[in-house]
Every structure is written in C-alpha cells, then in structure tokens.
Length: 507
Ligand SMILES: Cc1cc2nc3c(=O)[nH]c(=O)nc-3n(C[C@H](O)[C@H](O)[C@H](O)COP(=O)(O)OP(=O)(O)OC[C@H]3O[C@@H](n4cnc5c(N)ncnc54)[C@H](O)[C@@H]3O)c2cc1C
Image 1 (cartoon, rainbow, N blue to C red):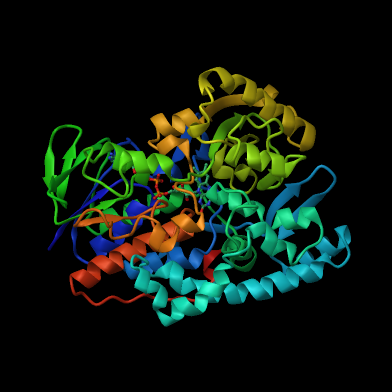
Image 2 (cartoon, rainbow, N blue to C red):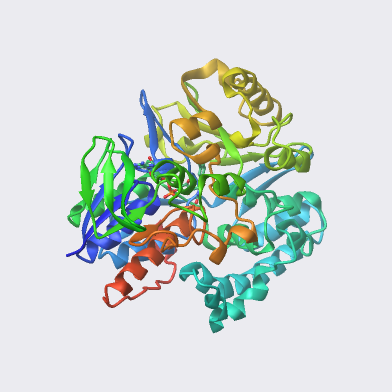
C-alpha cells in the first residue's frame, strides 16, 4: 500500500489520517508539539481542563459521516451534549438568550422588538435553501475555474450573494441593530467583520440554529482525541514531538519530509495540516514557490487574532455555557481588530463556562472559564510583552462591569494566557492570525490554496487554510475532499455517505 505522511495532528490532519488509514494506506503522522489536536487541543492544569481553541461544535452529522466512512462510530469516541440554550448575548441595553427552539426564539425576539420574530422565521427558511445550494461547493474539490461550470455549482453561485456583505444580508431580515448582530457576529469565527464578510456566510448562524451546538464531554478537544484513537486503531502511527523541518523535493515533486531530528522519511504523498502560511514560509526553501512565495504570502489577507485567558476558579458559576459580550460600539471594535489593527479600547468578549454543563472539567464547586477577546493579528506590530497585563486587566474589568461573572480575579487558582505572539511563536500560526487566511471572496474556493496543492506535486492540504475554510465542519470537509481526491487518483471507489442528522444519537 502507498505510504502517506501527514504533517500536523490538528483536526484536519487527524481526519485525513483516519480516513486514509481506514482505506488501507500506510499512514504516519508527524506532530511538532508533544500533544494532539493543534488549536483543538486541551489545556490541563491542577484538575481543570480547558479547550485551547474551538468550543462550539456544530453540524455534527459531518463528523458522524467522517467516522462512518472510516468504519467507526463517532458516538463510541465522543459523548455529545446539546447546549439547548445556545448562548447568551449581552448588549449594553439588552440581553438575548438564543435557542434553536423556533417558537421560543420567535417569542424572545418579538418581546424585545415586536415583529423581529418574523424576520427570524424568514431568515431560517431562506437560508435553508441557500445551505442546500451551497453544500455541493463545500463538499467538492474547487481547484479549477471550470469547476464553477459544474451544474450544481452554477446553481449555487447566486447564493454566494457576491455583492452583499453579511451585515447587508441580515439587514434584509431585521431592523433592530442587536438582532442583526445576533445573526452576524458569527463572522468572528472566521476572524472577519460582518461588514466585510461575504453574504454567503449567513449559513454560519443558520447552521447553529438548524443543527444545534454541541459540547463533547471533556471538551471539544475530544473530537481530535477521538480521531487520533480511531486512527491508531486502524493501524496509523502518530509521532509526537517530531516536527517536520522541511519538505523533501525532487524538482516540484514532494518525495517525503525531513524531520527536525535530521531523519528523512520518504512518502508517496504528503498531506499538510500545519497552518498554511506558516508551513509554506518555513518548510519550503525560498525560490521554490511562486504563487505562495514569502513575499506574496505577506500580501494576503489574514483573519484577526485572539487574546485568551483560561482560568480555574474556586467558585462555581451557575451561568450560561456560552456568553458573548458585545462592545458598546461594535462596529468600531470590529474595525480595530480587522482594519486599523489597533488595540481594542472596549473589547468584545466571549466566555465559555463549560463546567456548568460538564463537571469533568473542574473540581467540584469550581469552574473552568475560557475567555476570548478578538484582537488584531501580529500585522498590527502590537508589542504583547508590554501590553499583555494592561489588556488582561481591561478584559477582567469589562467582564466585571457587563456580566454576572463577578469577582473572577479573587477566585483564580490557575491561569494561563495566550497572546497573538504566543499563537505565532509557540503554536505556529502565521502572524498569529488564529482563523487562517481571510475568507474574502478573493481568497475562497478556486482562489484559496487548493486541496491538491497547485504548486507542488504529491502534496495535499487539509485544515483551515485550504478549501472550504476555517471552522471544524469545513475543516472536516477539507479532509474528506482531500482523501476522496487521493482515492480517486488511486482509482479506488469513493463513496460519500450522507447520514441524516440524528440528534437522538448525539445526545
Ligand atoms: C481560539 C479559537 C477558537 C476557535 N473556535 C472555534 C469554534 O468554536 N468552532 C469551530 O468550528 N472552529 C473554531 N476555531 C477554528 C478551527 O476549528 C481551529 O482552529 C482548528 O483547530 C484548526 O484546525 P486545523 O486542522 O486547520 O489546524 P491546527 O489545529 O492548527 O493543527 C495544525 C497542526 O500542525 C502542527 N504543525 C505545524 N507545523 C508543523 C511542523 N513543521 N511539523 C509537524 N507539525 C506541525 C501544529 O503543531 C498543529 O498541531 C477556533 C480557533 C481558535 C484559534
């Protein structure tokens, strides 16, 4: 059987490795860190467990399909809990508890502004059609311009709403500013502004309301851990603390990898999961790449970054699992992090209080809080060494003033901070842009780095830097697209299983 090397044990790399191993390939996965999961890893300290990155798991049926196509059952690896009260949104003059129960959601919106509930119903109905039309694009290899001419893609193109931003699209459903933000803030998952993000991404909030948001017991990191376990059961080998120093090349063909230890590993195909721009600037010699040379990569658009605080508290907070606090002037805040690249004056903040749902995450009577404030990427030149403490204080002050999470600082037992500098230097994310290359239309589909990497032969991409983009469901799709394409080249039969969403199973 062909020998495959996967670089990186993030969710994209693990999903591809698991699917390839299940098809009989001889797969070795090399990971630079001593842990599994990449940005989807866990952080553990003194009895507390935090997710490092992803905390929202949606479109569970995609993960179910990926496991099923590997002959496995997701639910044997991950114990999912649905978060029915999905998240609490805190504005300066209102609090909205978002639910996927349609009747309750309509009532709650109408209570705040009569009539806005109708906008919700219409949004869901219209976006359901949009999602159905766009799904073939999200599930197909999109690396030739003629792929736009496939009939199912042609049909979907109007749904990309090319001429409208996400904010414009939602403004056709809601009049109230807070409602518009309640259904557009999800562009932050891509590190983008709702005023810039393509209208097609209205599917993000739709996905949450249609398919729900899940918390795997132990954290979202359990998804990566589950894939790693399944991969090893299928005969795959994971090599931790074994960073890849460079790609081995014969001309433009990748023949294997050289590890940081100096060892050379030959392979028939190499699948790259490490952050795209980081890998291309560090693992490939200057002069080899044209389209994605260091100079050209510098000019691409990147997502924002995130300032993270993980705190273990000796106090239980009986508050929502997910809380989002909006800056009073949200538009200005979004501009600070995506355009002017300046330090946020009044940050928006996301708080995950997962131990309220999942007692395994903290000692009894304690809480494990994950606090995220979007900030500019390192293109901002902000010196986080000198700014870190000041910004941490601002985040705690904002939480104290605007939420019911009071006196956090008095109860801290354990604390860890990740700044954009750490994302770049320790977690190997180019410019600390945590959500990868931006998702502007100029960097999507055919214009995004291709799953079958266009600059090198025998080289494939998976993860948030390739098509269809950042976010766990799309990252899993990238792994499926890449695996299917490898299979096709190897003339195996390829079958995409489409399971119905079975929420009963998932609970
Ligand atoms: C703070 C944060 C919150 C997020 N929240 C959500 C969310 O709620 N829901 C959601 O769907 N998505 C979310 N995301 C986005 C996305 O799901 C995650 O970032 C995801 O982990 C990205 O997966 P990936 O496979 O692209 O790569 P990564 O997770 O980055 O994994 C890449 C791996 O490659 C390794 N690597 C790099 N270079 C080398 C090398 N030279 N040799 C060997 N190994 C190497 C890295 O160490 C890493 O383990 C979030 C991201 C962040 C950062």
